Length: 502
Image (cartoon, rainbow, N blue to C red):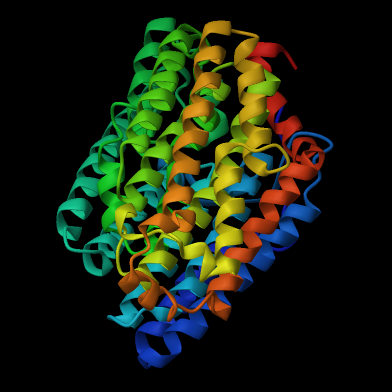
């Protein structure tokens, strides 16, 4: 793979990282009443920048665009090096969109408001930094920097068992990060021993020519770090607890953005750096992906708590990303990337729906609901579209990504594709069951419930503004996937160049 670099005429990427940090710093010295509007303004600025990059990006050839590189610690070969290809760019745009949604939704926060928004602003800067960094030191700094604000968001603004959930989240992801660090440092040392070069640039480490045994060792070290973040079965146990205890906006960012970092890591690092090890571990990754899809879909079916059900369904959907990625062909890779984007929309919308229901009914237990559609028709409609997109209904975004992932997998392993495809029925089953129980089942409406439900108000402006864009984008990808495929296919080909030629 020959990489070209298109230097930025204006440092838009650096600005998109600095803006949230700058606003967080300013908020620290301002009264609390400024926290909500300023945070929304900051997130909108970052979203406008990312949207500009999305439409200014030249996808006709593979190049790292809006590229910036400045020497930082020259005697160790460390530089500040940022830029985007289509994979990075779509993840940055998804991140920027989801933070706007999270900030608009969070206007109802009443507890320690200033600290809440500062934590989210720092988290946004770290998330964008992960997706744009091409120097491994900066990548790791941003990767670790995410842990602290998310730990605080769950631990301070979460529900009753928030400390347990935040601690479990931190321990799992921190140990995963240690394996990632050991792997990267090992490659850095190997490069110096072989070439006499000290560099932490992604591109210098990409063509090391590692012996197969070393490839396997480094692949496993990095894979452990990424697998915990995805999370893949059996490393997923931290996720349901974190989702259940996190505040609504925290769940949105956790599902829509943070989970993507694990799958992003597999696509960005594991395949281009360790092609032989990646091929060697295809059966293992397929097996783990299928187990995640089927087992967690069955677990979702058994849940009575809305957020826990959505959390298990997220793990199941990430299984499609895993098998699509390790199909090692264009269909699978395009499907994996589009599933990552689509899951960002659908998971964010479903967690917003769960938060919306809790705001009205004060319960996440499905048995406490029933017949809500009659009293909140606008919400019921948007919730239905989001649920159907998550279940993979044709015409909505979930169908495109999962269909391409299955198509790519089918070319490599028919058994894996069939098993994963059958699980779609389970996915549709628990989604429809949840929706039916929560929104339609009027047989569970008691007199006291009807009296309470009649006082419920439908969506307010902030809730509609945060929910509606996600639903529109589900249709945009579902009805016109060609634009997104054109955007990412050159990058997919570049990532797969060691497997399919190019």
